[in-house]
Each structure stands twice: as structure tokens, then as C-alpha cells.
Figure 1 (cartoon, rainbow, N blue to C red):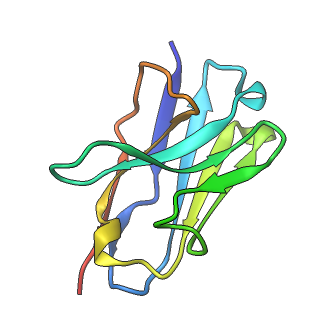
Figure 2: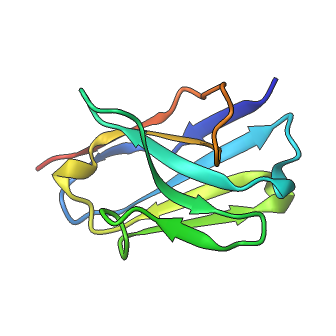
Length: 114
């Protein structure tokens, strides 16, 4: 079964930055498009950033210019650099294939608050 382990979240002030990491295992990571998703309290999970196997990226309008997704196929890891954080970015962040597998990791909590 696929394993996805997210890390790097935390409590940051508005305007701050974080770098999230997601280590994948038991999948042929390099052939899949990968994405970062987030779920805020009371809201549905949404895809905020995606990267193809070839490295092309796409972002939700709400994060464009602030989030950067990248991948290291040798490490089976996908990253999300988050800059200029806003309170509305508060959510649990998950990585998964794009489109997602049925399995989800535990996610990593990002809280933006002063």
C-alpha cells in the first residue's frame, strides 16, 4: 500500500514562510503527477498545487505567486514552499497523486496566526 508522510507544518505569523515535505513510498513516484491538497476546518479538501512527472506546475488562484511546488524523484519526495502566509492558509496540508489515491497520509497542520 502506498505510504505518504507529510512534514514541515507549524504555527507561523502572517507573512511568514514554511517548507512542507512529503515522502512517498511503495509507488513508482517518478511516473506520477503529484499534488498538495489542503483542508481547512469545515471546508472540503482542495488541490492547491500540482506538478507533473516532467516538472510542469499548476496552482490554485488563491496561492499563485506565493506557493511553489517541486519534486525530487531520486528521493521520492515532493515539496511545497509557502511564502507570504495568510490566516486563510490555515489548514491541514496533504500530498497525494494528482488525481489522488484513495489512501491519504496524516497530513501536516499549518496554522497562520499572530
